[in-house]
Image 1 (tube, rainbow, N blue to C red):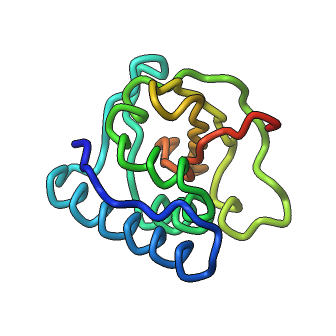
Image 2: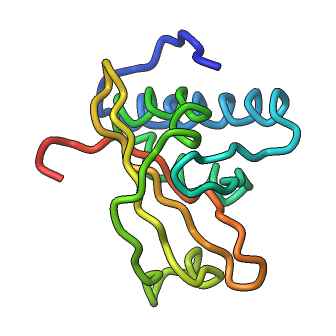
Length: 141
């Protein structure tokens, strides 16, 4: 589900806010097209679930740059094909990460965008993989 959008490339508050709206609209359309709200990841050999937290975290981070917003529009492909780079403990002072037993940092290389970071949280209770955030990796990251 790749959508051709006019994504603002600037750094102004208005452009960041508009990118946030584009991400929210994209997730709304994606959820409508994917009622199960999950995609099977090849490397994990398990599903990655998309929840409200996925939208929240992604809007918060991906709206800051054009490339990260563009990366979000490749959500299905990223969820399916990203590979594990490292597994880490959740940040202790992060409210959104308290429900996870670990965070899986994954990566996907997309032509035209470059390296994309996918963060997946593993829920403590159910062990479900929850998409936490998607951002394009800048050269110095």
